[in-house]
Image (cartoon, rainbow, N blue to C red; front, side, top):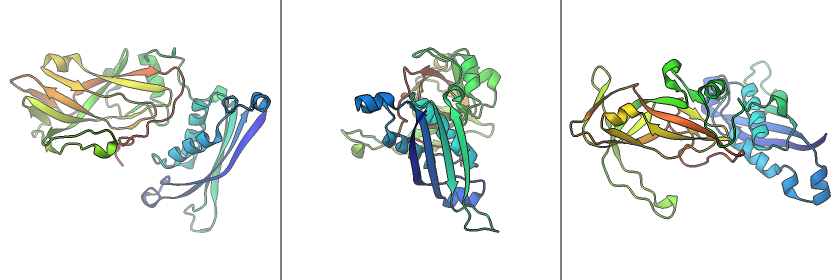
Length: 302
C-alpha cells in the first residue's frame, strides 16, 4: 500500500493528567503515516484522487488545540478516528503523538510518545445508518460509548433516550435585558445582555410570559458525519412554552443554549433538570468539516 507521511506537525494543546498541564499547556508533535492507493492520483494528476495533506494538517490542529484529553493515548485515538471518518480514501494509518515536555521529574528533558495504528475496518463509525436517516435509540446508545460520547452526562438514560432522539435537560435560565443586532458580518453581531433567573430553594423556576435564554445540562459532541435538530418536548408545548433552536452542525461540541418563549399568560414552572428538548440526530450523506463558529466548545465544564 502507498503512503503519505506528515512529520513534525507541532501544535500547542492542554492535554495531560495533571491540573498544571491542562492549565498551562505544552507543545505536542504529531507524525502521520496514511496508507492509501496513490495510483489514481499519479495517473491523473488530480487532487480529488488523493488526500489533501493541508486539510489533514488543519484537522489535526483543530483536535490538538481543541478539547483537552487526560491521556495522549486518547488524543491519538481521536486523531485516528476523525481522519478515517473524514477521508474515505485512507485505508489505514499510523498516528504518533509526542509530548516533548512530559512532566517526568527524573528525566525532565525526555519526550514521551504513543503510537497507534488503525485500519478502516476498525474505524469508529458506529452502527450502520442510512445516509440522510435519523438515528434510532440503538444507534444512539452505541455512540454514547464513543470518545467523546455523543451526549454526556445522561443522568437517566432510560428516560432520556427516546425512540428517535435524546431528551436534554434544563440547567439554567436568563432573562433577556437589552436589544440585539445582526449585521452582514459577525463583527456587527451584538448579543443582548441578560440577567440570571434564580430558582427557588427547591430548584424550581417560576417564569412569567416573555423571552428567556436557557442552557441545557448535557454536553453534545457530534462526529463529522452527524448533525442534529432540536425540538421542544410536547409536554412543554402543552404547558404554553416553546423552544426555538438553531442547527447543531457536524463537529460541534458544547453545552448548548436556546431561546424559550413563555406564552402562557399564567406563566410556567420548570424544575432544574426537567427534560425540555429532544435532540434528533441525522446521518449526513458524507463527512464534512467541523463547525468552527464562535460557539464551538461553549459552556463545557472544566
